[in-house]
Every structure is written in structure tokens, then in C-alpha cells.
Length: 296
Length: 289
Image 1 (tube, each protein chain N blue to C red):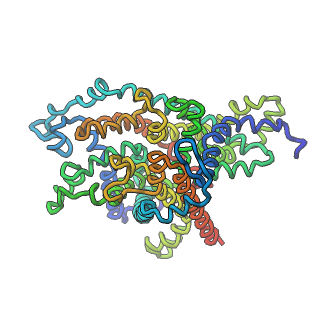
Image 2: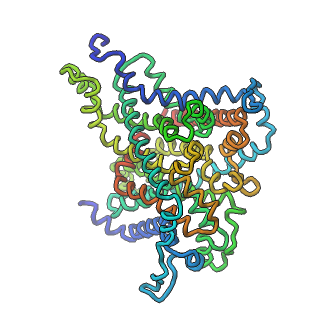
């Protein structure tokens, strides 16, 4: 095999070089550096000292950190129970061979995920305003009992964020489900149909097992993405640096960002980031274990 | 052909599906429609009407109230033209280079055997679990030492090595570039660079167009990186400039929404034109692999 090689040993490295150069300088090295910083403390601009696990111990007793963890977990649960059913539901509605305008619907549902988060923050901050906002005034004109001063952003922080993210990402995950549904063998569904299975039974016993691998991937994407939820709450509540009223919008990554860029506590910020990374890796490993078990 | 009668029977169900889809499509589109209407209204009309101001005109709308004044303000009084050029520059140069580097890297990683290949692949793809914000501070430090803060290069260089892009191209190469074509080209004495540009790239062309749009849109929409790295107002892209209106023109909603519309429209147009490539590029990794 080795003798038949017609290219030089250097050829693959020639192609990899540009990518690896940027990767090493701006991803690999920052990762290593942040791992070092997680065990260090910065005193002033130039002095850095190794402090062992102090940063991690501090985290245990830091009420802001735990508020951020609580908000993030709450958001993650809410994101899973809203986004996955919405995305799968839309995909199931669209997955019919005889449907006209399927491509148009797919484009419409996907379109919000093209909008940058800075722009989503502008749109939703105006739409969710108390009296003048589009959402309250529409709800009020549909249901006169609806309070036009309903305090979405001031009081209902999590529902506001969930609403914006649902609009933003239901169509994004939908295209993955749709692609998976189109790979479900039609003969299986036809056979179930002939056997008299109800639509729900067909979904539960034929479709769901077939799309299980994609469902697992999307579940992992939604969970790990939600654990890193940051830009939208940070921008929607940028007057308070992302804290929101009563710190209700504070997420783990917002707190990391504030600690690193606002307070300049690079060591503590890195420790938070690496703890989060460990949790994400743990979640990915659990998901993999579960998937493998299912396949056995 | 044969199931046609069955479909006739399903008519009410089909109708229900269309109704549901139409309802959800309407909900999805409402924020866009509302934004477009708000952008052509005056500051006063914004508060008195949900969509377009009512009046005696055609369809009961006061067409003469509509104005392009907000766009005039954006382009004449505010640094929006410059920001638009900055966004176009950053997103197009960045996406072309990132696509080229990822295609080259994906080729190098998948079509050659060398020791340490598996470890390198795992190391690169493993970095996708790192939270982006964790790398921001040390990255800023590196750019600072290289003297690249407040320079476009400071935005480009870190954007050229996305692990996700490398993954997509590696998959595309494994799935569609046969090894024997490369071998026979080498036997014919074709150079490695020529093989890549004339044989490999044309084969993975669908992935090239997909990744070009994916990374163009991602760079266009990025807010945090340019906000940290580019401090001179004249260098900032639309995301940073338009978002800064939120603080400066707090109750000037029509202006902000017109600015948002100007920022979203170019990528929306690109997406509508190339949506097939875009979506198939995104889903190719997850669904088949």
C-alpha cells in the first residue's frame, strides 16, 4: 500500500496548512489558554497567580452563578418542550407527497432563522413593548379581555425569550425533521395502513423509530444550544448588561461574558466556561450511550 | 396514480392541513409584515396603526401617509451606507476564504492517509463543544498581541477555521470524491494543486455554494465579534451600527425597524434565491451521516 502512494507525504499538510494555522491561533490556543486561566487569578492588569481550584470553589458560593444556572436550566427545559414538538409538528404537516407549495412553506418557516440575533432583539424589543407593542395590541384587539399593558419584557422574561426563540428556530429544526421523514420508507407506512393502523399508531410505531437518530441529534443540539443561550437575552436586556429585571435574563454564558469582559476577571470567566464545557461533553456522552443502547 | 381515489376521500383532512399550515405561516410572517409596514410609516403613525395607517385611500389605507423618510435618514444622516459596505466586505471576503480553507482542509483530511489523521480529526471536530464565549477573551488577547484589534484582519483570521465547515467538506469529499480518479490523475502526471482545483472542487460544487451562503449569512449576522474587535465606528458592520440605534433613538421605532429591514433584506434575498443549496448543505451532515 505504502509503495503505491503517488503523492508526497507533505501533500495533505499543504492542503491543511491554511485551516490549521487559523485553527491553532484562534481556537486551539485560546482553548489551552483559557484552561490555564481557569486555575489562575488575575490581580491587576499584569499579575497572574496560580490558585488551584479557588475559582471553582468560589462558584459554589456565588449567588449570581446559581441564578444563571437556574435560568439556563429553566430555559433549556422550556426550549425542548416547545421547539421540538413545534419543529416536528410542522415537518409532519409538510411531509405529504401530494402537498402543493411545500417548498414555499418550507422557505417561510425557515426564514426567521436567517435573521441575525441583533436584529431579532430589535424586532422583539419593540413588538413586546407594553402598550404600543404589536403583540399586546394584537392580542387586545382579538381578545378585549387581554391587558394591553401586559408586562412581557418587564415581568415575563422567560416567556418573552421562549416566544422569540420559538419563532426563530422552529423552522430551522423543522428542515432536519423533514429530511429525516422523507427517508422513512413509504412501503412501511403503506403496510401499516393496510393493517388498519391509525395515524397515531403509524406515527408511534413506524415513523418515530425511523426518525429516532435525527430526533436524538436535534435533542442534543437544542439542549447544548440552550445551555449556551447568550446573545439574545444579552441584547434584549442590554441596558442591564443582560441581567434583565431581577436578574431573570441572566444565563450562564451571559455571566461568563460579563465576568470576562466587564469585570475583567479572566480566571473566573474561564472556570465558568470550562465547567460548562464539561457539562456539555457529559450530556453528549449520555446521549451517545442512550443512542447506542437503543440500537442494540 | 393508484392511490388517487384514497386522496379524494382524505379531502377534509387535506384541507385542515392547508389551514393549519397557512395559519402557522401567517404567524411566522407577521413580524416581517409588521416590520415592513412600520418602516414606511412616520413616527406618529407608528403608534396609531398596527400595520398601515387607515384612511380614505384604496383598501381603506392612507397611502399618502406612507413615507421613505426613515430610509432617507438612515442613508443621509446616519453612517448606514458605510456600515452596509463594511458588512458586504466582511461577509463576502470572509465567506470566500473560509470556504476555500475548509474545502482544502476537508480534502487534506479525508483523501490522504497519514499518521495522526484520526487524532487530528477528533481534535478539530471536538472543539465544537467549546462555548464560543469561552474563547473570546484569550482570542482577543492573541489579536491584541498581533496588533490586529480594530482591524478587519482581526475579524477574518479567526473566522477562517470553523470546525463545522471542515466537517461538512470532509463529509462531502468522503461521499463524492472517488480515490481512483485522484490516482489516475496522478499517474497522468497531474500536479496536486491542479487536481484539487480542476477535479476535486468541481465535484463538491454543491457543498461549495451551500457553505458560501451559510458562512456569508453567519458573518453578516455576527454581532458580538465585530462589537468587541472593531472599535472605530467607521469600520463597524450593520449589526453593530443598527443595534446601537436602540440606545440612541430609543422611541424612534420606525427608524430602528427601517434599519433592521435594510440589514435583513440582502441576506433574505440571497436565501430565497439559493434556499435549496442552503438547506441541503445544512442537513447533509446530520441526516445521512
